[in-house]
Image 1 (cartoon, one colour):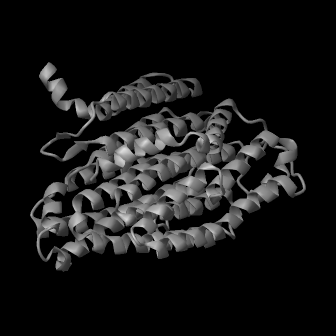
Image 2: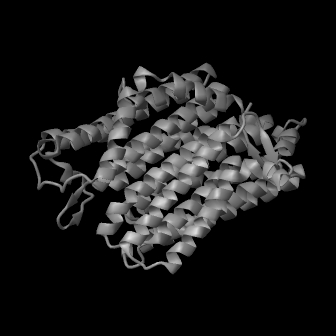
Length: 482
């Protein structure tokens, strides 16, 4: 028994999540279907996520492998898993009050979040094309249901259907790419694929390159990179706001971590080929994120385009393909998660007696009725715009510097220009809150949303004071990939 435990210890966090989800499912089925019971199961879900994070932190340093190297735990995986678990727990915490008010608080939501998070952790540790697909589908199947969790709401059902149809298309493209890669390398293992790509003439192997392109396309859908972003604004707007919060945080981290591992660990031998694809995705995402958000009137759609732009900036670090570039990607994702959770906590607090509101114009004069919320949202908007000395500035600074050091200064210049253009719609929100004529007051901010807003604002504001712990941890995580 002890030998079995020690063998499978690297998978302990994933096993805790899956077993926890099954136990909570049984509890929900056999207990009365009330809001109180559903929230209790939600809190138990947060405890399970916390236990999984503790198990990840307790894992020994170095690299452990399971299933002939198909499942890998290294410094990079541990860091990204903890970030994913924190994002999932915070998203779940923010869901209770909003879903209770909408009469949509169901115990199944916490169970689906746990299962989706287990899939994300599998993605982060995937070191094989089969493991990659298993993790991706476990995450996706849970997310399809989560997007349409409010079956009586037309927008939520539409969001779930759009995500399902386009997600199935992306999975097909990813599988096609994986089959081509297997056909031309003779293996599904990233280590064997990496060895095949380092062989003479691999860079001219058209079949292998087409397979890689299809694989990246499938993953680009999951991170909402342009031109595979088409589902994002509609799903963000249509899904219930707590679900959108979850979509915007945890799955993005896991999908970016998987994309990083695939290209760095699996295709190091044909780096120039995939660098071109990643650079194109980065430029397109930054450009669309900067321009498309300008005309938005719904704050959830605006944040969807903001997320697309942010993925473009993070991809600059990936395009650099250096330890410093990957460190920049990791730091960017940490800061992005903090800013996103804080911003969506503010969106969840946009409530009046008749229900939640999502119009950007509804924020008019917020500073006169709720100065604390206006100040926090203003800070987060300035940080998303990349204005120093807030954390968002340093997130972009790290990836731009990494690109310049690798000679990719045109990409960094495009990033700076896109950031300047994008600053318009962030600053516009601040102007509306502080200078426009006041609208009807919002209801008071609930305690859970206030906690997330406050922590996010403190992180964004005080990061400049003590950045060393995050930079050092990200540096160690990035170096474990090389």
